[in-house]
Image 1 (tube, rainbow, N blue to C red):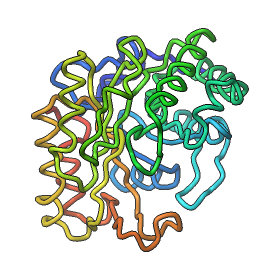
Image 2 (cartoon, rainbow, N blue to C red):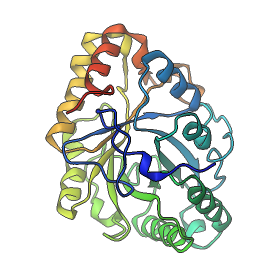
Image 3 (spheres, rainbow, N blue to C red):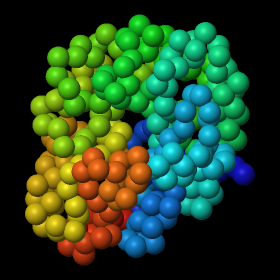
Length: 303
């Protein structure tokens, strides 16, 4: 199956799906991606009628599952990236590459077969793929050391480029939720980070600002690689809209964020997140939220 990359990037709150080079978004535009498991994504499109600019999903350097097959369900749903772009032609992908406890193995060649598999697949699909290499590099839950992280990141990018991959956009993605971390120690270099990324959950916005400022200094566009109203339920309607969504959109506009990757999941029913009070983030669960969301990001709209 082949899709032409020039069919993608102008569904950016405006309905057009024409792309320029991979990763390019016109000035004044913002793209919305929806994640994160296939069933949740299909339910969102069916309930809202909104096909976003792209979809977010995951794989791991250890298994490389969920790209051209169905992933193992580890308690947060099943992924299949190929199924998404076949079902929704003209969309792009944003993929989080899990690398916990595998950094040294990566740059020592232990997972070369999986990098090769990823390269073959990316060249076959020919749609833009925003690859978050070792996403949330500064998150304490990942326990990445800066030296090993940079070496593994650079190793993967070099391997994919050497294999002839041209539709990848390499994203350097910060957890942006803990203070006191010198993110510059993790920076792989201007030639390796095409974009910068942050997570946007329930943390204060000032924890996100250092990454945004660093990216601005480097001339790198910024995406919100993961966003969800953590600890809230969309069924609370206008209260959660005013308390989480409106501040999100103001942050996006104030900081020229180019992509929002929204996780439209009911976290509370997922075994992986049971008892952690992540809430229910499904847009379609509340008519007020759904209408306000589509008024903001639906096709035909523009920021």
